Length: 148
Image (cartoon, rainbow, N blue to C red; front, side):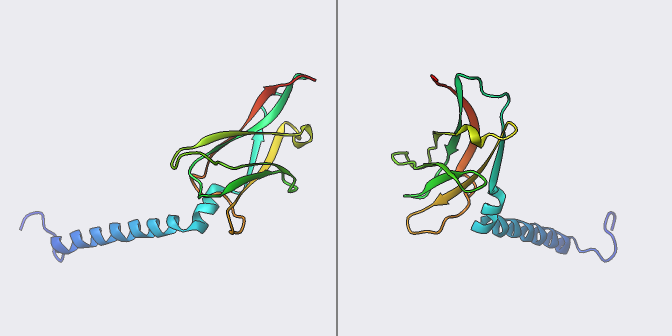
């Protein structure tokens, strides 16, 4: 036979390729579908850098963009030392829809033009945990004009 190597069964090699792909796919599915893996991928701390120092007539606030959260859950925003800056409670947001929330930051939270934040999710009757993928879509710093 032309093109067929000795000892190679085409039906068997097709089966081995399919079984290998199935094994890899299932491994990835189980590895990334557990809550622990999602928490590790989401990260624990967020360090944001200001593009410029705030002017005398500006304050710096943190903007949290949320995704889908479990019913009754809220996101707490703290600094590295555990001081609470504020919390986000997405009540009235439709399922599957995200929202934007702003929380004022004290000037003492900005060190070397950076802000270190810790985000935790608190649910009704559940232990505090790290945000899972999709629960926090983004965190950024915004300048807000103020009268001093």
